[in-house]
Image 1 (tube, rainbow, N blue to C red):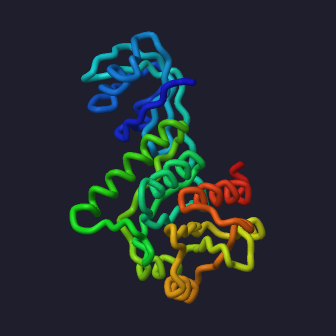
Image 2: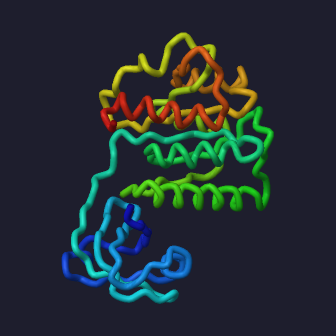
Length: 246
């Protein structure tokens, strides 16, 4: 499999066949010192906004990597977007969820401070937690060679999610729901699909009431109970089929 690196400063107009593009900073350092990339090797380079360049390495130094462009493609952003609203969870279960969901194709992530979340982002932990999730999403995108890099939004509370439910299609993963996610009809518009996953203790009744009143819909995955680290990725896979992505 070809190595894939990201440089968000790349622009399609500068990546025509025959052009030489340069990558610096931590990405060049990682490519040369960790991945051991050397001149003459083939690799892929993306900008996280749809562009992927294939080419041959010309120079490989820890401070700068240069690539002669062979081909470049631009992939349009997916519509509607699938956004994972992942409740903060104990241990690394929330991180496992967003890593797998990124590989499966989510278009955005919203960390949620749910009522039953044992883990809490407070004070300096808010920025630290978001930075950590952003790093996980970035690395998962590189591993799966994704043209688009999902964004990680700021920490949201239940009231903020209720506001979002007014303009998006919000689906609440709830084991007791009457309807299955597999029975949800394909959307007829381009509104974002917000897939809400609760913490280990589930979504609190008061939160369900608030979000349903704002327009959200409860759905279940099946007859078993999945961990918060598993539920989101499983639901994303179903939506990929529903939307015709797979």
